[in-house]
Image (tube, rainbow, N blue to C red):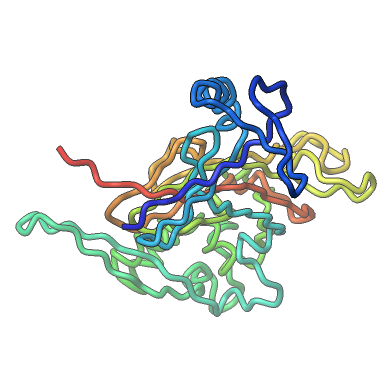
Length: 308
């Protein structure tokens, strides 16, 4: 490995005790003894180091390291998320859907005790299952009146499918796909269903660090700025204009499906598998008229597997 060579230029304005004279060319010469030179280096070298940034290129490595005040400062890449969205964007609600004839995907998990493992099966279910009661004349949607639906599902399908229809009925994406009366802002029930706002994929061997606290704001057209974000109004809001008497929009975080984890200046990640960091809120915390903005700055750093 070729060792780095450090070239230091010192400019000192000072009184020198030595012999000063001119040569024939008119150049000023300063002659110092070894003791005088050692004294100058002792007095000024530390000041030079403390105020100098040195770049060292090592031919054995393609990366560049920076040394400031004698400390290694690796070059860091920062990622900026400036995501502007509406409720429809994150809820997957699109106009003009034929809700009754739409479909959605549901998962059924089955544990096999003899093999001690769990199998996951995916079913594509028809939204018409939520309109079975009265289908021949005037359909009564499940969300309007759920009476007799379990019996209808068991007769039309089987117990497994009946359970899936029941269990998925109030999932946000199912209502967006199947419920023709669904507004998406939870106004009918103050829904606490989680809604994903943004996901960051973290490759194996990396960990995420947030350089600032993630924030979410909302656009106020009258004032022409982004400020506190709100969702649907409380049931007692009456005729007060939105966003007064409304749920405030909070950001919740989850790494690798682990609740209670948060993106901060401390790294969080896996040395062995790819993971996902998710930012989410509650369904009632979004409003159909809101123009929202999510902002966060983060970096990815290397991590190693713990060796016990």
